[in-house]
Amino acid sequence: MTDQSLDWRDEVPVSLRFDDPYYSLENGLAETRHVFLQGNDLPARFCDGFHVAELGFGTGLNLLATLHLWRSSGQTGQLRFTTFEAFPLNGPEMIRAQSAFPELARIAADLAPFWHDDARDITLPDLRFSMIEGDARETLAQWPEQADAWFLDGFSPAKNPELWSDTLMSDVAEHTATGGTIATYTAAGHVRRALAAAGLEVTRVPGYGRKRHMTTAHKPG
Image (spheres, rainbow, N blue to C red):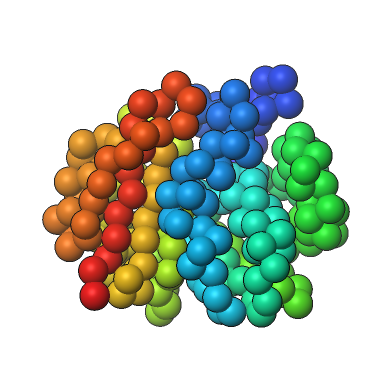
């Protein structure tokens, strides 16, 4: 289910399907680091086998940034990264989007051959990656695992409400390990309420750039 509705704005891919850029027009890497890495208290929580799960793979920027942090922090062992994506970009689109971040060039080069082959599973000495393709409202409920950290990175709730439904937020909470965390760029009230209703401790914190607030959550033990 490749999304053919794609445009480019100064080398930032924009989904015409959802009328939303795949990452911040200001600085996508800085946003990822602020929202998803700092928002989940990484790299402090890294350990061998640490499992990140994500709603909305997009360009793969979050994967590259997380693996870069893993390597630069000196963490040993293997990072696990599972992503749920309904409309994967094709290989050339993925590679073009990832080329916008010179700091991540080495990791992008490591992964480029897999994108060329439209791979959905990647194993490296320090990474075990899996993309679960399809509607997350169906696929997440069937997923047998739990994540230590979640990146909720679908398109804007106003434009992609399906990926922010109460039921899906409940599924996310169910598939979060005890002591696990969740981070997202949105501070939409209905998203925070849904996460809280699912038993998570939810906090509104300063967002990135022009976004005054974002959301983090924790699954108490």
